[in-house]
Length: 161
Image 1: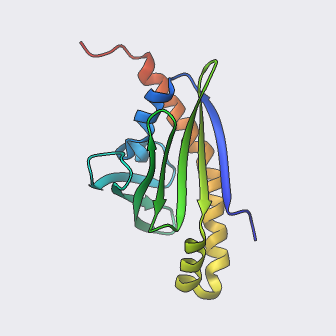
Image 2 (image 1 turned 135 degrees about the vertical axis):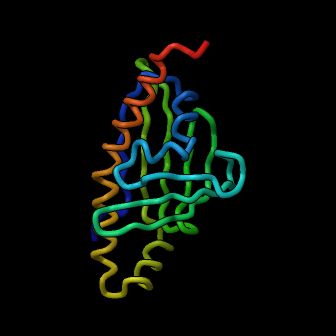
């Protein structure tokens, strides 16, 4: 079986706090992700541990919604959430570097997700899991590059008067 976790990093010319504020605003995720088309908060007023949000996702083969719970919300350090009651964990860490912030996005298919996929897809579970692994490996660099473009463009823009 393939590795069930993946992470990549990119350096962004922005502070860890500014980058955290951008990434933890899940309502903007549809601007960056190749699969997620939009998110909205279900409960809570934003990125706080225990807050829930729904994500709307689309690929050429299917359309689906997920419900996620924020599990880490440390401004300027880390933002993470688990999808569908602990099936998958997505996380972002913000590490200060000379040129700004090293933004790392991580993805981990959790044991509950493996069990859920076996129950849902039966003998087709390994292929479905492989599809999700491929989507994470190809989507993370696309998402990181888009976040970098947005963050650097917004930090270069003058503040509204």
